[in-house]
Length: 189
Image 1 (cartoon, one colour):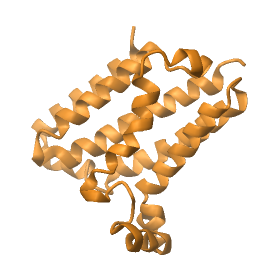
Image 2 (image 1 turned 120 degrees about the horizontal axis):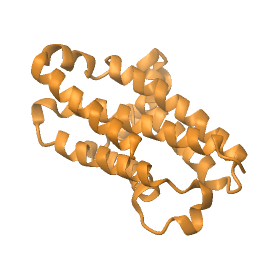
Image 3 (image 1 turned 90 degrees about the vertical axis):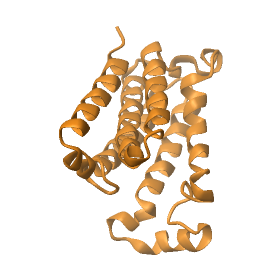
């Protein structure tokens, strides 16, 4: 059984049905800085906490603490370094340096892919169990990540829904990262 993978595919299927039944409402829920994106910020913040706790309990602390730090950076990027929630000073400094309030939209969005590389390395590189030890993602987590990655590609094929698909899939990705962090934090050792 692959419950995380099934959950990812189920949420994606429900979103497609919702988009067919009520496209305007679905677009509103999945809009930039809409309800789904704000929920993703909360889920991502919880993932930072979970991975930090996993680092406290891990026999190998480097991976969970590095992931917690990486996810904290992603969270700062997602909230445009505070600008989304009314703290514009740091976001304005980022805009002056990168031409955007965040680094992941610099280079016409191509730097967004750099933020995916650590996650691809963690979830998809074969043979990582040798050096990740107990922090190795399980089979379900790997398949769920592959499903999210495949859905990202598919979502980018439909320009009218590209932004909405990205917001939904970011939420699913952050939920997977939270679930993985919670599993590791709860594991003995």
